[in-house]
Amino acid sequence: MTEFFSLSIPVKRGYFVYRYWLEEKCLYVGAVGVTRVGAASLINRLGRHARERSLWNEEADRIDYAVLSSQEEAKSEETAQIKFLSPRYNFDLNRCRKGLHDIRFPESRISTGKDSYGTCRECYNERMTPYLRQWKKDHPDDVKRHQETQQQRLGEEEWKRRHNKWSAEWRARQKDKAA
Ligand SMILES: [Zn+2]
Image (cartoon, rainbow, N blue to C red; front, side, top):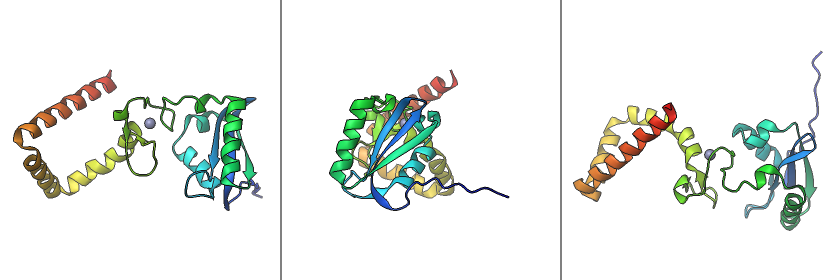
C-alpha cells in the first residue's frame, strides 16, 4: 500500500515568512505577500526556489514557515528573523537569486519588468539561449530583417563596431568556459 503524507503547506494565498534550515543553521529567510501584489502563495514560492535550484534549496534539510495576518507584519517579521538568525544567503547581496552569479555591476542584471532588482543576466541567458537559438533557426527571414533594421538605425559603421565588440566578448566567454 502506498503511503500518503500531508506536508501541511497552505495552498491558499496569504502572508508568510519561511525559513530554510540545515541542521541548526538557518540558510535563508524569505517573505511572501510583501510586494504590491499583496497576499500570495507560499507553495508557489517554495516551488520556484526548487525549480531555480537556489543554493539554499539545494542545501537545506528542512523548511518551516509562519502565517502572518498582514503585509506589514510579514515584512517586519522577515526583517526581525534575518537580523536574529543572520542566514548565510540573505547577506550575500552580491549574488543573484540563485546564489550562483555575481550581480554587483549593473551590466550583470537585465530588466524584464518582473522585479525591480532586475534579473541576473547569466541566469536569463542560460534560460533563454536555447529558445533564441531555435527561434533564429526557424525564422531566418525575421533575423535578416532585424539585422537590416538595426544596421539602418545605427549606421553601418556603428553596427559593425558593436557587432565586432559583441563577437569578441562572446568568443572570450566561450574561451573562459572551455578553460
Ligand atoms: Zn544568476
